[in-house]
Image (tube, rainbow, N blue to C red):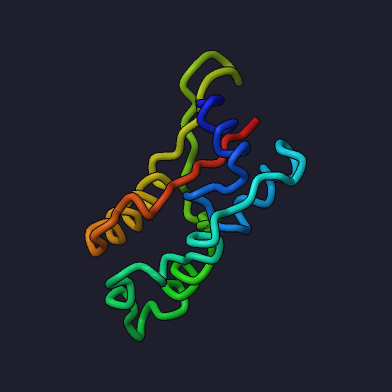
Length: 128
C-alpha cells in the first residue's frame, strides 16, 4: 500500500479523493504536495447518476446533506447503539453493529442506483 501512495504523491494528483478529504493527509503526511485530480476534486455523491431518486419530501434535508457534502458523519448519539468490545479488559477491538448497519444501508442504496459503485467510499473512524 505504501508503494501505491508514494507513486500517487510522485504524480502529485490523487484520482479518487475529494479535495477537502485530501487536504488533511496532504498537509500532515506529504508536505502539502498531495492534490486531488481535477476530475474528482469537487465531485459529490449528488453528481452521480440517479441520486436524485432518493429525495422525497420526508427525507429531503438529510438526503441533500448526505449527497451534497464530501464527508458525512452520522450522529447516532442517543440512539442506544452500544459498542461491543472483543478482547481482554480495555484491550481489543470495539465494534458497533447498529452504526455499521446505518452506513451499510446508505452505501447499498447508493451503489444499487449507480453504474459505477466504486465511486463511493466508506471510511471508518477508529478510536485510538
